[in-house]
Length: 323
Ligand SMILES: [Mn+2]
View 1 (cartoon, protein in one colour):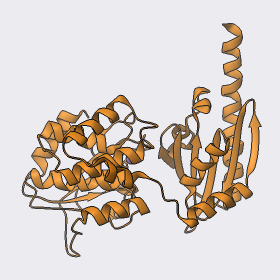
View 2 (cartoon, rainbow, N blue to C red; view 1 turned 60 degrees about the vertical axis):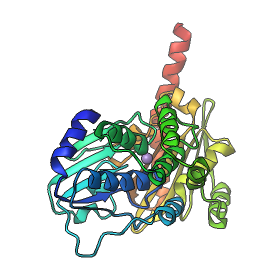
View 3 (tube, helix red, strand yellow; view 1 turned 45 degrees about the vertical axis):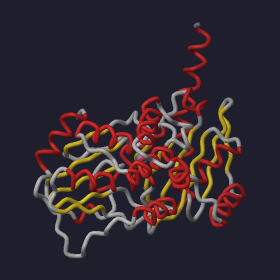
View 4 (cartoon, rainbow, N blue to C red; view 1 turned 180 degrees about the vertical axis):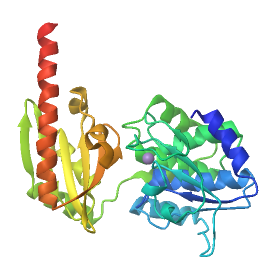
């Protein structure tokens, strides 16, 4: 659905209603700021009450939480309308499964394995959810105050790796937010990754436990950690891998994070479609929750990936030879 129809649907649904905003588990700055913003928007559109459920945060979202200190939902709050940001439905959200109503709105920028039947404003080409929320606010005529503008800018900076993966749209959105009073330095402090000792240890241990495979000029690595699988997969690319899969235990399951660099993407690698129904994300950064032993899961992923990728590589050679 395009932003105008989504805005009109919200204007019709929210007045006088109790609204809950959900985002993904271990919410990051993009999820946090977009959810916080939607609670702000819901109140401006006449919701009787609106709260964001943001009590499961990563370390950067915690900084945002300290700066904004949003009021948490009361224990006995029973929402009538749900808004989900930065993930593609209630079932992927933190506490969204508790929602018992049937009016659900989704704003997201991830490719969705199996979308729920909801009113959705999803753009998988967008670099962040925060910039989609800003588009929506413009259509609705809701101006962010400087604190909200700073948070939205922090979300954009975080999801774009400080503009490394930004689109022209993200950069325009950032400029608009600065004009609306966003503080760039504060926004930057929300987006710089955690450099805690535990993260640095996780990176080093993952490097110690690496499995390495080569196909053509592509280097694939896999490793395991206890936490920070996404950050560690990213770090393995900067060590020299083109594709990295890192697994970490999550309860009885295994969470796998994948990262692929520009070269791998140029060969047609798409991690979001590689994980398919099991996961979600983008072509160069995706994750999935899987069952089994971490090592077994990684071996299977590496095997499947190499099988799929070898075809793409030989196809590329065909193209070169025929030109
Ligand atoms: Mn995001």
